[in-house]
Length: 180
Ligand SMILES: CC(C)(COP(=O)(O)OP(=O)(O)OC[C@H]1O[C@@H](n2cnc3c(N)ncnc32)[C@H](O)[C@@H]1OP(=O)(O)O)[C@@H](O)C(=O)NCCC(=O)NCCS
Image (cartoon, rainbow, N blue to C red; front, side, top):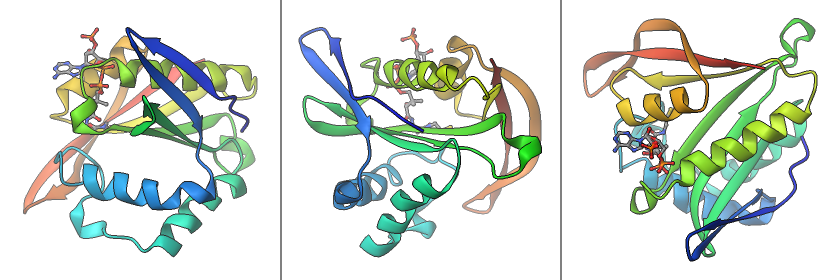
């Protein structure tokens, strides 16, 4: 999926959104290794990390091999602050659906970064006329993220029970979707 670099003013600061390149792999690796310890609400945890640089490069390249897919990074005054991933499907019957994942580094929370990342990526998706549904999964107790997604027009579609096991406790995930 194409994504044109965007520069968004946040007061006196600038949020730059651009496609992640293979050469970004070391920063992307550091970003995920950092955020994984900042919240228990992610769908993957410290037990899934650390990945090697080679794994991270394969992860970045995999977006070019999957239809309707892209990995976008947000830079707050040149500091990597957020990543959004969009994954399409190979199956013809599911090619109108993409899955979205979003994270913002804790030191950048509450600066409207997630809102701007979501607005930009949703407008890019809307330009792909074939995509009719954007879907995501979110931890049942992640009230901030659920509020954000509702604000962006997502509705709860379902509840997957015992979908996550974190430190011996089970949690449900909400399936939320936005229909285009
Ligand atoms: C959830 C998350 C993405 C929000 O990022 P952010 O950049 O701080 O969000 P924004 O500043 O753009 O706020 C967007 C909206 O999110 C909600 N929100 C964000 N932080 C919140 C908080 N602490 N309490 C309640 N609502 C909150 C609000 O609805 C807010 O809209 P408002 O400013 O009009 O009230 C961020 O906290 C995060 O990355 N958390 C950890 C990882 C995660 O949960 N990712 C999502 C996994 S599905």
